[in-house]
Image 1 (cartoon, one colour):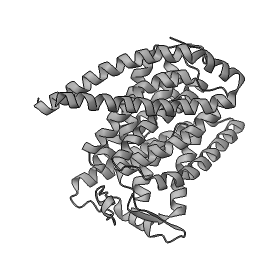
Image 2: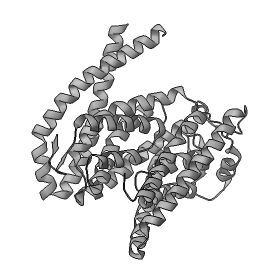
Image 3: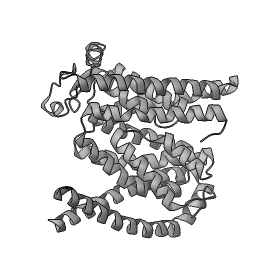
Image 4: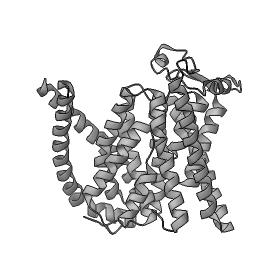
Length: 307
Length: 80
């Protein structure tokens, strides 16, 4: 099928299948899936600029579907998502500026590659350790949920003692999040969002691989709510990214629309599946995702070919 | 395989087939009616194109989700 905006010939079945796989991952883990979508679009001959911009547009649609499904299960904290959107956009801008600085210095590829490998492997290692420990422990050192709504999402974590210490920092204004059953300083929320945005601007993609674990371990948000809220926040940040890429001529919306027909059903399956797994099991299943990202970067570094 | 699991799997497969047929029709409709217009918009009015792109994605997400939910409900009702 010919797509006139990017001038590419791509099989629509391929796009639907790629969308479907990314939809399942996104709905289940709360990630955008850029680490798969980018290389998958590149593999069929789409230029990198179009692959990045088009992927962002498709993420908007996929996240809308997943968020609506998660919201029906009570898994979205709208207040937290809106606050985080400010920090994310600020962080993304700083990340993009850092990239420009490194470009001028002439060593952007090597530094970004090394940072991303360290970050991806660290996240995976930490999550393996934490989820294994939590699953083996009966008590799990959980953060006690203060409301009835939150107790439904009671989510034990072996990192709970650190999360409780962070929640005790009394740095006003303190923000009450009834949907998540957490009261925490606004500055901590903004910092977590800013760091997620920074990685998004610095390494590309939606940075769900860092934001979702940060929401669980730093803010103490139950895993199911972290997945739903992260997706809600991704709608805002990916819309912003889609618009900025569209005005630079990097978005083929027809490709994104076709991909999204597969993602729409995949995202629903992924979102519904979260209801059958406990938080620590979702976190353990999340571990391979950053490792796939690290493997792609290592491959690129060693061969010089971008996937 | 338990009876319930088999029913769910069958309902899902039926839904997938109907959905695939709808999607094929949709491809041709979108590319036929919107392809040329979106291409012109992308070349001449980038800011409008950016807004239209986001609205189209959100609109399609809402419509497709409602379609799949409707299909799933009607198949389940018939299975019962």
